[in-house]
Image (tube, rainbow, N blue to C red; front, side):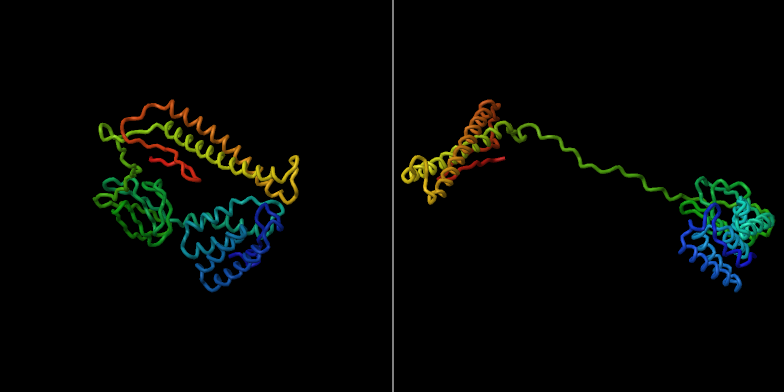
Length: 328
């Protein structure tokens, strides 16, 4: 085991001390100290948790070696050997701390010894439709490429399970260090649970257009807009005429009090009202002439309507009001 001072050397490879967040360094140091205490008390699982957390904060080879030591004590030989292998392959610079150099030397020394202790298993799967089956060793899925080949496993009691859909088979084997075992598992017959088919998006049924005597008559949009223009024009003419009459009355009143088109200040409000009415009248007549002209043009050039009730718009005129009404 490395000394405590070595495990607390935190400078990662290729980094300067100032590149490490101070809070992360302090947290990692506390986690390593806690892990060392748990290690001393024989709690290797708790120590592994603390060292793994610290290594996540500061990637130092000294902490990685402590992880590997815990894995080795827990019997997880495959993971421990890979952790040692990773550290042993580090290339240290000339200015690397001595603790880093000791960590790499320790990893290089222990990796070969652990690899010699590994057990090997060669698994074969038989049965109908075994392609795509999942293989789990102690609950962890292994790559499909390992099926039919020899792969390393931890010594001890191992639970091997093959699962495909609702079919499954499992067996517990006991394997010793350096031992090689072959195992054949047969999936029981049965139907795999099919994957639900992909449903195409539903679309509402297309309704064919009605034909024959039940078809609704169509109305020319040109006719509709013709009636609308005619109604607007009529309303404009009425508004222009009404405001024109009001302006005419105000003009007569102003002629009685104004001399040479000059009115006293007291009549200024009447002058403003007269000008406003005259402007509204002019605008109303302008809109009316354009609207009536456009409406008549559209109506006269529209196609003949079908001999059925048509949608349309017609103008209406009342006492002091005007507008359009229609049916669609």
